[in-house]
Length: 490
Image (spheres, rainbow, N blue to C red):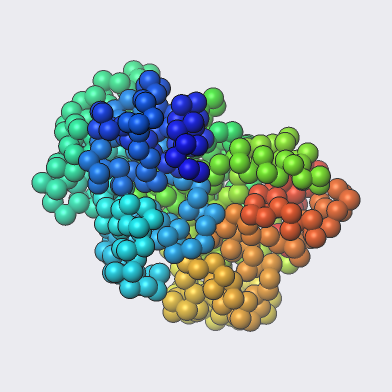
């Protein structure tokens, strides 16, 4: 988009572009969402920024009315595969707060100076400024949704000191943290359910529409007992995060453009990573109107896309776990893969110190599976060898499934492992790496669905760059014909 197109989107209050770019007004010193309900400013007084960090660096503060810090993320970073997009996915996961710019550069395989130069040239802000903007957003969530002392919030959000925390909050939001908390308490609905001690409750915004029912059914059909539980409207699971473990609960809300999320974390420094992984799991940064509009014009897939414009492509909260489970699911049904996952969790999973209802374990990590004897695993030996080989490569760092991983490079390394074929590599690429263009041409479900539509896998070339969404449209046609437990994964 050029600036004139951005101005037209802002003038029409188009919420689809919230988070894609930010509108800054020179006469007020404020930056907003494109859908901000305030009166549209004159064109000569408007500037546009790709990130909130760039707007903040130029001296603009966040609008108190439209809350641009609470916008959905930009879908651009999942679509693109270049260095900038990979860096943005890693920064969103909190790597700069955990490991600094040096950690970001190490994961990307580039020099720090080159990354700073590239991000500043394209986005108007370097990695530190981008991380600072995200830090402020995390801090605001904690200020407004918890009763934690401000000092604890400062360090949990990633600030180096309380002084830095106070200065940043005042600069970005033009309001001290204590006043933000007071206003949030006053605006909270009296009928709202109380938040249990130790729980963070927040909202995960998205661009409507969303097919929440099918999304939850997809997760429920694959939920591993002990690690996950799901209903028609909610999903809960244990999660291993960079600093500690936790439990997440997500619930869809009717007639709302957000998902309610509750986090129980052993270490509050994991808030940023937990939120981003929840968003990737439910594909909340997607632009469903763009996807369905493109696929809806296709002669084969068009009727499916038009009938369900809110289709999502679920990701995962842990790339390593998803990869191991993909190998478990080779050549078996979804129900059989669940049973294998449950046995693996019972034998090798890490029990929670405080189980929560049916959530009792975290999925075993790669190092634990790598140390296992293939003969002792509850599956055919070739698959057990493939599972241990993959776990060994993951534990040694030969294959990295972090958000900023090079998707083509990961695919090539996966295919070089024994027992890992194109289906498994593509499934990992689609869900662990959130690739919107991943496709599984050898999947029997896709072939069956296409045969029912009178087409072949050659039609998929027309669906780029949204082939992962096409996969879910095709799978959904089979799910309507049978119970989810009977659907096959390969």
